[in-house]
Each structure stands twice: as C-alpha cells, then as structure tokens.
Image 1 (spheres, rainbow, N blue to C red):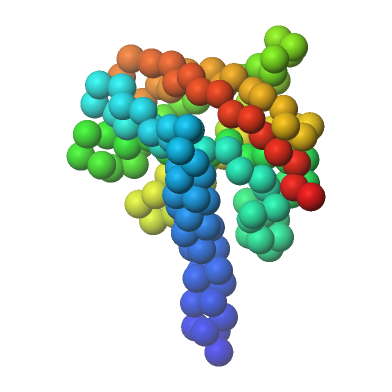
Image 2: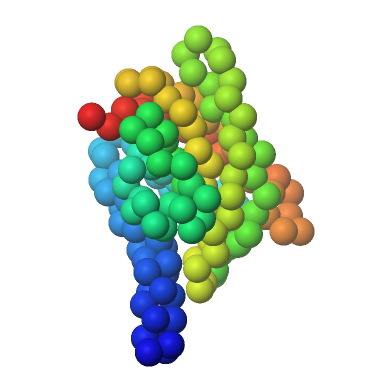
Length: 154
C-alpha cells in the first residue's frame, strides 16, 4: 500500500512538468508570438499562461497562487546540448503605461527538466513588455525581451 501511495504521489507531481510543457506548446502555436530565442550556446523557451491551467493540488505543492487574473511566466534555459540549465533570472514586466512590476521566479526541477515560474497579476487585455536578464552558471548574462497581450480567464 505504501508503494502505491508513493508512486501515485510522485506521478501526480511529475505531471507538473508535462502540464508546463503542454502549455508551452499550446502558446507556441500562437502564430505571431515566438516562444524560443537563441543566445550563443543557450536556448531560452518562454511562455505566459493563466495560473488556472495548473491543477489546485499541484499549485499548492509548489506554492503557486491560482487566480483568473494571475498569469505565470515560464522560462526554461537549455545549453547547446539540450540539457536544462539552472540559470539566474532577474526580471520585470512593464505595461504600456510604463509601470514596472518585478518578477520573482521560483525554480521547479522535475527529473531532467528545470522551469522557472514567476507570477504576474494582470487586468484583461493588458500588454506587457518583459525584460529578463538570464545568467547561466559560469557564463555572461544576456537579456531576453518579449511582449505579450495577456487575458483574464472568464
């Protein structure tokens, strides 16, 4: 019985990596919104999605606040071999009224995957310019910039 409970618990929390990957692919399908940029030896995958896409128990496990007006910024950095890298991220989001909101990332590691997740409270159809300084271990920093129009879930 203990092994079955442990297996189910592990499986449930491992699903967060699958959910994040699926959400990343879902938003990558948006034709005018590129979700990957290459900086020398590093590739950065990024997306923004509503926090309600994460199941309540998984969100609670990782300390993620869910809400219709709560977006999550998901960043994943890989080296030239495709291996996930635990990079330092310093970031802010700036709306069209030039208001800056600092982003605080939480790192989630599941097997070989490393995701950095930052919450951002939004209003419907708000446009943000994201400025993220990425510093891979033992490497020079580089800046990822992208823009997203974000929506509150109905």
